[in-house]
Length: 474
Ligand SMILES: [Zn+2]
Image 1 (cartoon, rainbow, N blue to C red):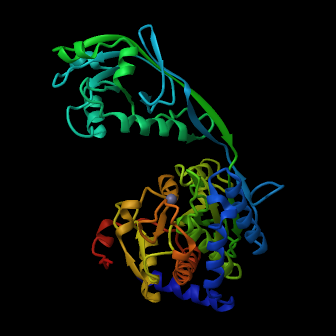
Image 2: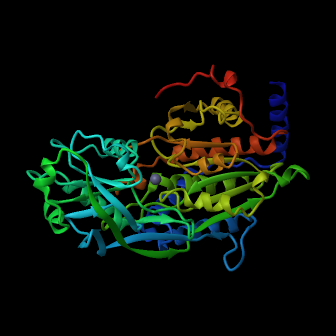
Image 3: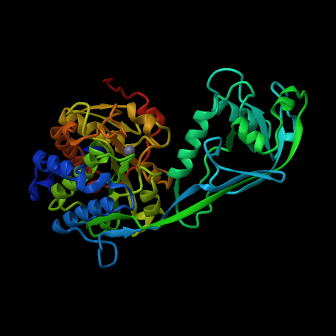
C-alpha cells in the first residue's frame, strides 16, 4: 500500500513539470469519422484502405515526434508477410476408388489442403470400433432436423476417426446448408503466415448429396440396409488451393523514457486499425471496431508527448486482428525491441459505445493474469468516476493483448461491450460517442503514466488479493 502511494506522489511531481493536456473529443470524433469513411474501404488487412489507415497513423506519429522503429522509406511501418489461401471450386475434386467428382453445390468440404485416406461406412447406431482409427468415416445425415455438426464431429473424434463424410439420406437431403457454408468457407479462404506449415482447413467435414454419392459409385439404398461397417476404399480430397501473398503493416512509434535505467523498459499501447473491408459489396466501416481504439491510441500519444515518462512508451497500431490477431503475432514473433523489455501491453478494441463513463476491463478475475494493471485501473477509474465492469473476461482471448499475455507479458484490455452492430455494415461513426472516447483516453493516459513511472514492473497478484474485489454490473 505504502509503495503504491509513494509511486503516485512521484508521478504527480513529474506531472507538475509537464503540461497536462486534456483529451479532445472533437479530434477523436473526426478521427473515427475519417477512418470509417468510404475512402478507407473498411480497412481490410493488406488492402489499400488498411495501408491508407496505416499512413494516417504513421503521419500522426511523425507529427508528434515519436521515434520510428522500422526502415525507410516508411520508417513507422513494420511490414510482415501474410497469405490468403482459398480454393477454386471448379478445379477441386473428390475421388472414391477410381471415380472422381468436382466440388460444387452437391459436394463440398472445409478442406483447403489435400487429403488421402481410407473411408469406412458406419451405419446408424453402430459403433465403428477400432476399424475407424486414423481414417475418415462416412455416415448418413441424422434422420431428422438440422444436423448438429459439432456433436457429430465430437463423436467422430471420439471413435478415433480423423474426419467425417456425411451422406444425404435417400429420402431427404438435409445437408444443403452445410455444403453452402463449406463452399463459402473455401472461397473466402483462410489467412496464415508464409511457411507456417499450419493447415488452413476448417473442421474435418465433407458432405455429399444423392447425385454426388451416385457419381462416386455409392449405392445409398444398399448402404441404408447395411448392419455392419463397410470399407469403401481409398478416398481423396484434392482442393485446388490458390495462395495470394499480402504485405500488411503494423505501425509503431516510440516515446523514449526519461529515466536513465527505466527507459530501456517499454510500455506498449496497442489498438488494431484493420476491419473487415467490403463484404458482399457492403462497406463495413468498423467505426467502433476499431476506429474508436485507433483514435484513442493516437490521442493518448498526443496527450503524453510532453509527459516525460520514466519508462519508454511504444504506440502500436496493428493490422490483421480481425483475421486472427496476425499483426500482434507478427510483432511478438519479430519484435523491433527486445521482448523482455516490454513490461505491459494496454490494449483497446471497441471503446466508443455503451455509456460514456462505463467500460469493461479484462483480466478482472483470470488466475495468473489479474494483477497490478487491473488494480491500478480500478484506482484510476475511481478517481475519474468511471464504472468499471468485469464482463470482458469472456473476451480475454479475443483481441491483441492476448498475444502479449501468451508471450508472458502482463496485459490488460479495455472493451466497451458487444452490440448488435458488431461486424455489420451498421457499425457507423454516428453511433460512437466522442465523449466516451475522451474519457477512455484520459483513463489510458493516467494508466500508461502510472505503469511507466512505477518503481516496479507490472505483475500478477495472488488470487487472495483480487478475489475480494467487487464489480458493479451494468
Ligand atoms: Zn472485430
